[in-house]
Length: 242
View (cartoon, one colour):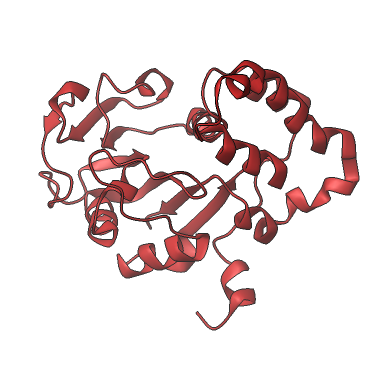
């Protein structure tokens, strides 16, 4: 990559802009803002054909949000997640080359020490014409399960995919965010700030998330992918296999 301008002209795309409908969903969610933004993106993904969920299982709390697959296969080391295939995803996947039409992974790669290997394996088992979807945190607390290794920037994820053999022209990276103040709130929301915070957090979330709707065009930086990537709570990393 020769420079920031060249890099961001390729895989980085603008996030979904704030809207009244999205606001109502986010403020009424029982989940953290980080988690709900990932779920929102997950539900927008139409899975196609035979689909592999890396790090998932029937007991995953997002399992009912997956839709469109003709067959859903999951692989996980944790038996309690009820995967269809019990296997350590830190090792090569126990599937043949080009055996899936879609591969998806949610909040898993940050727990793997070698995410390049994981991305390469996901790409290996994907058929030509298929899509790889990685939903990953960025500005989020340490959450070992049992380990937690990294938080990549958008450019970092593009590098991971490139190292896995995926051309930059086949990549798309979308910041998952609302606005900078909401990101700051989300980071504070997982900190141990006492009983008063937890009593007031619902009201505070409504007030904080209302800001870009009230500002209107003053908040137009939300449509700038570079600015959005700098305060993203996570990324939706997508690659299309030719």
